[in-house]
Image 1 (tube, one colour):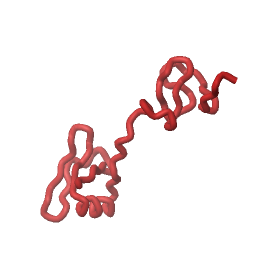
Image 2 (tube, rainbow, N blue to C red):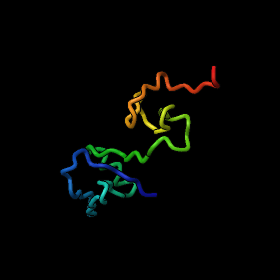
Image 3 (cartoon, one colour):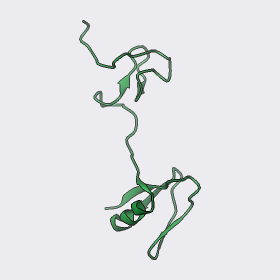
Image 4 (cartoon, helix red, strand yellow):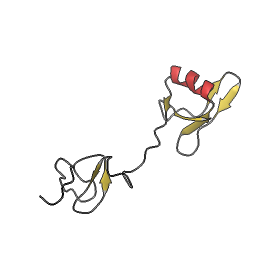
Length: 92
């Protein structure tokens, strides 16, 4: 199974592991083998976190109670509403 890696700097345009050369896709992610991923980690690359928005998982992040925007922060980035502790209540 292939792993997805990210370079420690956006200036990295290509990397060579052993006899294989890798270039990133448009998002800057390298798709490499598991063994090459280990070598890249030792050189400072990190495994890509493909976790996206908080959509369809109410246990992650905060959902603005005013506009419904999903965020990792209590302060809504869309409307500026402070969502307090982010804990949903049943109307109490």
